[in-house]
Length: 552
Image (cartoon, rainbow, N blue to C red; front, side, top):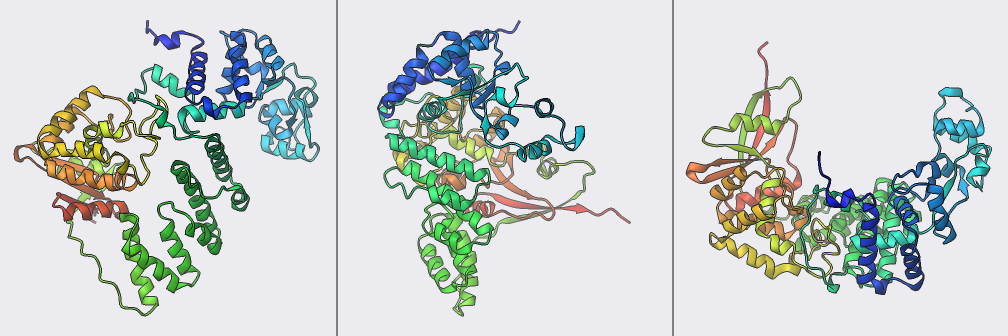
């Protein structure tokens, strides 16, 4: 018999987890909870266990409306009895008003027919068609028993979702994670690094911070659900100057809205958003909007300013492509092109596979030998080596980086100042590459941190054999160069690595290989890595595959 983890042996494990969150938030964020919310939390804590458990079950499901017949849990017992205390304390509405669409979300097509009669198109009609027909007959809201008087079922509504949303945000520091994180951890599926959390770790420092985060999150949801960009812009907050962490999220939403305006041809409106947006890539898009609007001189002036002070290698790469075109249109002499060293090219003719194939694996099988094993690693190997060496810096308890025990990495991982805020810690880690100390650190973390969630280490792809070959064949000087470029722009430079790596253990050397199938081309981030490696004498090449033509 398989023994379940102790937490899951408790049928009320979810209630225990919810209580943990409430205690955590009330202890660490009491200053962000108002009197009304504090009273609600006290009311929830004082409920009889079956009622509290049922409330938590509903909170952890998609709501806020629930059919009572669907609230069947062995450990709780009778749902109607458990609901009594929830209704009495105003936590749940036992007879909420429902729109027709909300009702349809709770009923099947057959149940809608039982309530309202056959669909106009007969049994073959889809639920959506039935609902369209019903909308012509009904409007407004009604209780469930008024909509469906012959049903013995009922519907209730959880009334404390705003509090639960706020509590969850304060605990997780985002609206993406949910209560399942506890269960995954308890089952051993996820293992998280333990980071010392202090009051300085808070990213949300005031109630206004929490309100603004939730506002941005809801606006983002509305945008993803297809709401008109103009409506969202009316409610978009202005620049958040007192909280960089929130401003990054606001700027990202602004960038998405500008992209949507651009897609729909509203170029001047898109330009206005791009011009006031600090999100990476916005300046390049502003240049492009100026160009498309016919203002080539302004586009060229902004491109020249960007060329003098690029925000990233990605922007510099795009500006170098745009400037010649703009200069030609203005009749100006072309700027001198930046020299880039040549990258080794390998042309490979292979029989075209009959069935599904992975071209990288076909090339790996063709090039590998007994003395020169080859691995399909793409972004996993170098990232993993970086993550293992710099584990202490990545998980340093920097203010605003860690909020709770279920983080895979720091919250500011993709921010522009990620490296700067940990500069000394990363310096100490990379300094180990000046001696053989780095090998012991990587091996130790590989053993001690195995399967602990990390934003860099791909445990499922990193075998001990691959790790040892990498440590044996890749010079420390190469690793240092690779890691320094990653740190210069974590958001962009942790992808684009070559697909394959081949080792010659007896010669203590290696090479990385980017594979391109017929009609495939290099992506921008791949080109940047190839150029960087070539400039720093890091062995890399591109293998272009063509299919052998069968003899006629």
